[in-house]
Structures are given as structure tokens and as C-alpha cells.
Image 1 (tube, rainbow over the protein chains, first blue to last red):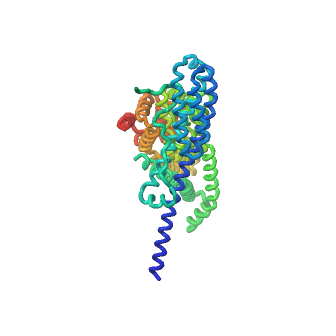
Image 2 (cartoon, each protein chain N blue to C red; image 1 turned 90 degrees about the vertical axis):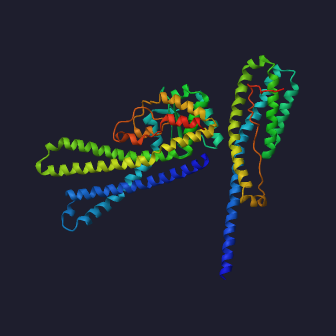
Image 3 (tube, rainbow over the protein chains, first blue to last red; image 1 turned 45 degrees about the horizontal axis):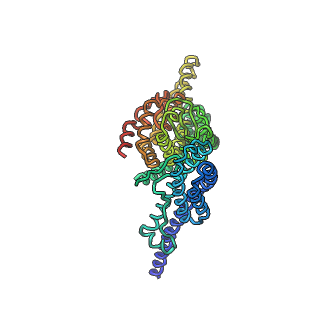
Length: 186
Length: 326
């Protein structure tokens, strides 16, 4: 009789322990998703600024159709992305396209003096700064989640419950602002 | 290392806040009891004169007063809870910083908060050319960071960012919460002490005019008030020790360095601040605790005299040296 009770007690304790681990994983995952929601806000602002940017640039840089098309295509791709991981990939593509655009715009000093362009430049710069800040929080939330998924003992159950290591939002340390050209090493 | 430090600090601060809040009514009740005891001893309670009825009558008078005392305590708590930000704002002459004209400052604060997942606090400004800043507020709704004109104008972006990060660290650690609770707490006793003090001075001034049969009573009253003042002084000293911790400043510096990933910026900001931290509007020692560097002339008065051991901030050279080693 007592052995039965003890066994039941042990099973109960184990159950509670597993439940705590599971709950922790859930909380960390939700924390990460919530952090990405904040990023979404900044990304949307960036998406909204791009059409305006394209319009202003078109007036001055008539030969840069290809580059502009690349930017617009990347933007549309980013808007259509659904899951967090897809969005990360799409937004990184958009950032590269913007970087490419910036390089080509170096050749248009008239554009750089345009009031509209300067204001857009400042607004995009603002958004990029905020994006950098929320990305940092997102990355630390991702780190916490990944730690929980990979360390012992929760790693035993993470796979069982369907939690896996997630990716960080890494732009490779480069912030894409419209006023500074990236360094190009040949 | 910092992560563990911050969590432990938060828990410690929360525990101390609760302790202070709990001790407050207990201490007030205790002091009221002593008050009634002394009154009875001095002969002001008639039923106590008769033999054998001393404790009984003192206790009954006391128990009758308890609901009123608790009522007053409760009212004080409510007032302090809702008005503390206003009181600090008024005593430092701070005003809300306009967002439209100060995009630079708002951007710095907002970006820092976003990178920490913190809710952005209110931002106030003090009209003073010296460099200083502080954080106040007791909950998410009332948390405020106040910057002086001087610090906004004279620090570079990365230095100002570091100072703001330091204040945000204090908010995140719940340092600010504990500090405000203790200020409110200590503030009441300080008021009572000053009241008792001025009563003593007026009594000793007027004792020669009293009639003879009352002079003994007057002397006793003076003595009893003096004892109360002394007790309060001891109490205040202990309480402030409780809330003050120089370690807090080091931890906030570390938190700022972690937030900005740029410890040298804070070091350079601190050295600029050290040259001119004096904020004219601040005369109370307990409010001075809130600032990033002690705002100049030490306050006069009851608490100020207990001075030296209670230095609220560690020496600035040490703080800079630690940051440079980061």
C-alpha cells in the first residue's frame, strides 16, 4: 500500500515538474513573439515610407529603374511574408535592396539636396534606429528561448512538445541608413 | 553577472519596500502608545490617577484612539501614493518636456526602452544650466525621468543616452520605488520631529510666563518631547540607512553600460557632470538621493546634520574608474 502511495507521489511530482518546464517554454516563446510584434510596427513604417522614397527618386534618377524595381519587389515580398522566420529573411532582403539603392544614389547630388528626399532620409533613419533597438530586445528574447530549448533538462521535453531552436534577427551588424554608404572592399 | 545582480536587487528592493510599508503603521501605533503612557504619567488622564487603574485606563484610552490613528495613517498613505510625483515635481521645479521640440531626447529614451522591452516613462525637464538627472515614480503609470536643461544641451548623444540608461536601470531595479516609499515614510516622521522641535523651542521660550504650579508639568512636557525627538532622530537615521545603498549606484552604472554597450560614454558623461552638478532648487537631502550625482550643497536641517556616513553617492572617480575597466 505504502509503496503504491509513494509511487503515485513521485509520479505526481514528476508531472508537476514537467508542467513547470512546459509552461516556461511557452512563456519564453510568447515573449519572443510579442517582441516580434514590436518589430512588426517598425517594419510596417518602413514599408510605408518606401513608395514615397521611390516616387522622389524616380524624378531624379531616371536610369535607375532596375535598382528601384528590386527595392519595390523586396518590399512586396516582405509585406507578403507571414511567419516570423519568413519575415526575417524577407526583411533582410529588403535591407540589402535598400543598401544597393543607396550606393547608386551617390551619383545624384541634386537628389541629395531635395527637401523631400532629406525629410524621407531622416524618417527612414529614425525607423532604422528604432528597428535596431527592438531587434536587440527580440534577439535577447530569442536567446532566452533557445537557452531553454537547448539546456538540460528542458531539452528532453522541448522536442516532445514541439519547441525548437529559433533564429535571431541579424542584419550582420550593419544599419541601413540613407545617408551613409556602406564600405565596399574590392 | 549583471543579469543575476539585477534580479537579486529587484527582489531585495521589493522586500524592503514591503517591510517599510508594514513598519509604518506599527511604528506610529507604538509611538502613540508611548505618548498616552507619558500623558497618563504626567497626570493628564484622570482615571489613571486612581491606584491600580493606571494600565487599564491608559490601555482603554489608547484602544479608543487606535481607529483614529489608523485612519490618519491611511489618509496619509493615500495622499502620498497619489501625490508623490506631483510633490517631487513641485519641489524640484520640474515641467513636462515637450515632445515636438525635443525629438532628440524622446528618441534616445524611446529607443533605449524599446531595446529593453520597458514601457517608456514620462520625461520632465528642470530649468537649470547645471548637469544632473533623476528618476522618480512608484509604478509604471508614474515613473518619470527628469533631466536638467544643462545636461540635455551639454552632453553628446551617446553620453546623454548613457545617463538616461542609468536612470532607466534605477527604474528597472525598483530602486526608485523603494526610494520613494522611504522618502514618504521618512518624510512623515521628519515632519513630526520638526513639529516637536518647534514645540520645544516655543515652550522653553514661554516657560517663564507660566504659573508656578504648572511649571513642573511644562518641564516634564519639554523633556518628554525631547525624548520623542531623539527617538525619531534615531528612527530616521536607521530608516535612511535602510534605503540608501551606495551599491545601487554601481549597479545602475553597470546596467547602463550593459544597455548601451558603451561604458566609456557613461564615464565621460559622469566626468562632465562632476564639474557642475549643483541644482539650485533642491534643498532636501532625501530628494537629493534620487539624482545621478549629488546635486551640490548638502541640505541643512534635521537629517542633513547626520551627514557623512550617509553619503548617498559613491565617489565619482571610483565610478569612472570601474566603468573604464568594463
